[in-house]
Image 1 (spheres, rainbow, N blue to C red):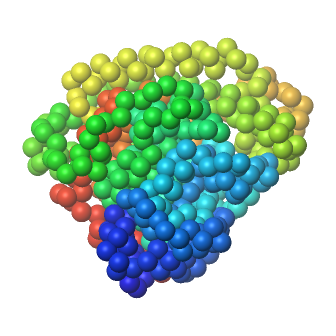
Image 2: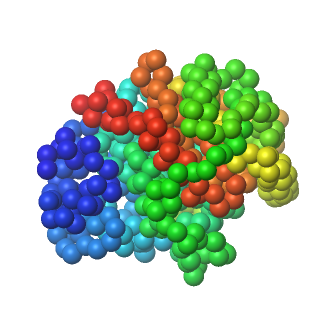
Image 3: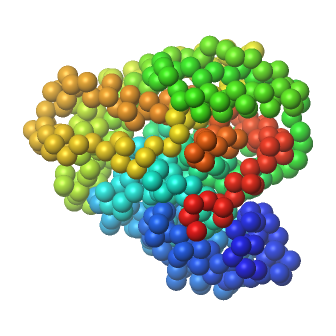
Length: 496
């Protein structure tokens, strides 16, 4: 097998090639590393190599549905025993796991060959991937633009053809945003379906979930099959479908009723490309026999964004405190934006965070009522095309001022500034649609059905009912068959 053939095949096909004796795991690993050597210096997707571990694993016997397929883990929440997991932060460079995270162990049991870790923003706190520790990851379709975040390194690696799929996770859109930026499939599963553990139980109070970004629906289905199931260290037992997702997608969905909207109280003027993405998808759905109609959003996304950030600030405060206590980190080891979020969370106290968590129930109820009429809620995944690298940089003078305020423990002063509104407008304004699924625990998927006139991906999102992961993948498979995205193969991107 040569590199061009390797890049055309998805993980399912590559596993079949290994099982059939046409190629070995070691040969696939060599091809993946060759491709990484070609493009990673340009896109900065892989920030830690695990060559010795991968070579030893590829040389040994491997079993499982993805035996021998090269794979990458996100450098956040996907701990590999004996390997640092930095969460994109200088404060955690000494964070070496004593055991594999549950999803990592299950992917290894499925036969994958892990050979590196991918870039992410500090603590996964942004929809872009531009950490000070490793520098920005870049979009393979145009390296002047972001691959999204926080699983941006994984998405860039898949889009560039280094691997057919890579580990990702999603606390506010971190699977779907980079999938939309890079022309990939990205499913945020139902809360609890793919358990964390044993190191962490449910980050962000269950808002964060594990998964992958991939080029094909069947890879997303199969790799999700690999990590779902009961886990003794999980907080609760999640219902697992009796029919594997990889089998469910072989059946066409029945006639569906789908409500769509491009409206957002945060971004009142979505880019025309985002509107075009949804309208063309709605037309395609109608052609496939589904009932589609434009609707008012079933929730107040401005209120939801504020609640989401309040919870996120509390989480940031806890993460910064943990890094200082466990690893002896100091404030200089964190980015200024992280310190501001942590100080806002610390100064606010527990009541605002507890109230925001309680208000999640309101969003659950309104979304449940919406789903009494509609099977899915269709929106753009992004309100505008992938941002340019550096577009969300905080000016240096503001960074210095913020550090001074944080050092003075003047969080009450920070709270009086319009920082939250600025964060909503700047950091969430271009991705106002994704946090709904996290706060409600519902599954949501990015489907890469649209490319802009400039050649950049811009996907659409479907939000489903609790536990509708299989049907969502089923619909995505139908759309993939109706409008294949193979013509946008990463080998034809602007990274050679």
